[in-house]
Image (cartoon, rainbow, N blue to C red):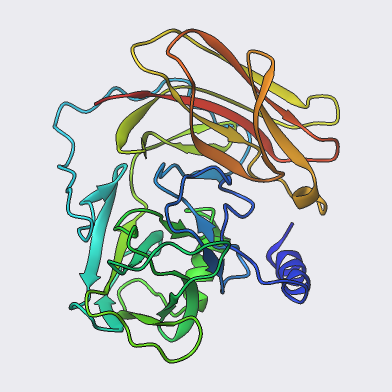
Length: 343
């Protein structure tokens, strides 16, 4: 599907219902995002929530392959901060290049930054101590985030909100569409961009609580990747407070006769984290068809076609066979990978 087709499809869907940022097309729905509600408000290229697992895949040209997983670095990983208002110095290898947190009680936050490249991801939060999490999508307070005056995202404010709870970008971190999407927001390498966050009551004119804190962090998507069958797979990952590193992967183009892909996971010290899906699907009905994850022949999870799920951790550390199956009509590249804990 080219960018024009995708634009037409998104516009048609927007006429029927408000879109939500929930692993659209590229990154899967099971990312354990702590923000209870997040709404997509921009991008024909498809805003993607990367989540705490922080794993990014990019469909590329078939035929490339990297069978070896790079060895772990000898230098120690950056220290993670326990302060819920502090952004980590990196997200699974992708460095923090700009960040800001508002003064207590301020309804606004402005962050100015000048990127050297436009392969970027945004993490934001609206933390309100004493304000409970929304129930069934009904929040007392919400926030909007704009980049250079253009709508980028919006979400709920709650007492549980923290820095790095979720991260968003435009799917393919090295594709032409990705760079085009950022350019449409006025984000250009070497030129200053301005991010503005605003908190407000969801209904009425209630005052912003005095302990409200808004935060935003900008990350460069420059961490280590490997390539398998044209798919770029991030080497480092994080999930539920643990660090992981890529230990095995396989990928293959989906065809009319090849709809399954399997991978053996050996026994280890801790349960492994999985990554799975079919990035690059360009079938018109991809969102109504399903990609399934099976563990030892039993269905574990499912996503919409064209998406990639990550953050799924197996129940035990024993040996397993994991498998991806596609509904008829789906295309793209089937991918499976597993990550072992390093902490």
